[in-house]
Figure (cartoon, rainbow, N blue to C red):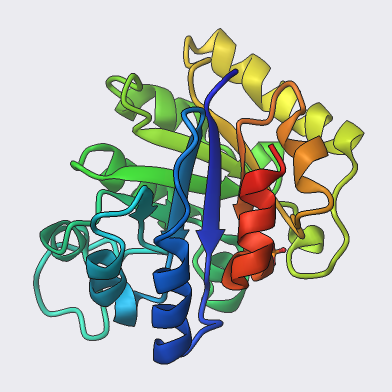
Length: 233
Ligand code: PGA
């Protein structure tokens, strides 16, 4: 069975105690050989959640980072700071960062270039084929053997709406992206799907030929649902 990724994006949905309670329950999830399970807590609590899940089979990642390095950037969080607390991977370019925090495609792509040349791995979100910067990836990804880069197709209309994309639609976009990646000799880059994934639809999505995992928002903040997704495959 191919390696599948289940990534929980907690967004800004949980307060501190709820994040800690959820992490303590998640500790009990034991990894299946073919599954890589990760959660992305609110940055304020990342350090704490890393410690809770230290001995577990679940990896803690970041939801975002700021472009700059250590310096005078009020409110920012940079890759070096994330690395210092044990974070080895970050999400980038989530549609909420693009639409609600006004991160432009140019800014997101500049950050992609930065992270591809750093020690951290990245999950790059896109909501259309056109948003994937293939040339930039080709020029900056030295070696993808260690899953340095994962792509995540997240149609904006499916995020948090309960309207999951059809399998045909997911396959169409994933195949198109995969074909271009293959032309660039980057066929090993996994492609996740995100948008209203839940325990009832996760098996079908995760079983699709060109889907390498799921990026889950709302359902990942409820332990039973997250467990349901993990156990669906
Ligand atoms: P959702 O969010 O599962 O709540 O639709 C997905 C995401 O934003 O990554």
